[in-house]
Length: 164
Image (cartoon, rainbow, N blue to C red; front, side, top):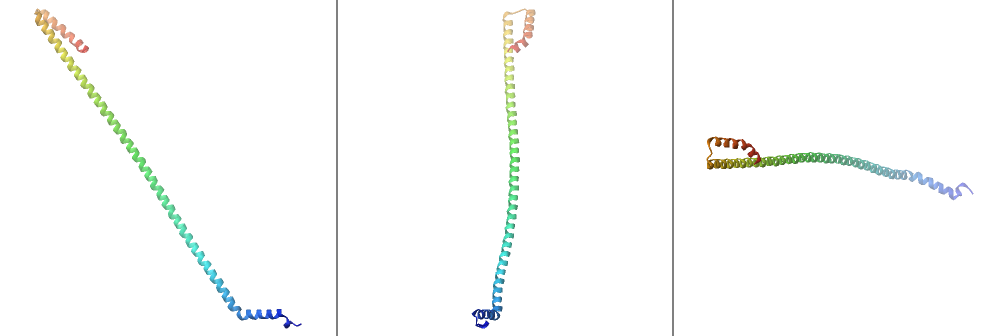
C-alpha cells in the first residue's frame, strides 16, 4: 500500500488545499471577528471609564453638597445660639426692669404711707394743741401759768409725735 492509497493522506492533502485556497479568507474572517470583538471590548472599556469618571464627578458633587449642607447647618446652629443668647439677655433685662418697677412701686407705697403717717401725726398734734388751748382758755389760767403750760405742751410735742 502506498502513500497515496491511504485515506489519511488524502484527508491531509484536502485539508492543506482547503487551507491554501480558503485560508486567507478564513483568516481575514476570523481576524475581522476578533478585531470586531476587540473593538467592542475597547468601546465597553471606554464606556466603563466614562461612567467611572461620571460616578467620581457625582461623588465629588455629592461631597461638596454635603459639606455645604454641613456648613449651612452649622451656621444655623450658630445663629440659633446667638439668637438664644440675645433672647436670654433680653429676658434677663426685662426681669431686672420689672424688679426695678416693683421696687419703685414699693418705695412709692412706703413714701405714701410715711406721708399719711406724718399727716396723721400733724392732725393729732393739732387736735392735742387745740384741746390744750381749749382747756387753758376754759380754766382761765393766769398768764404765768398759761406760759408754763404752753412751754410744757411744746416740750412734749416731739414725744407725742414719736408716739403717734
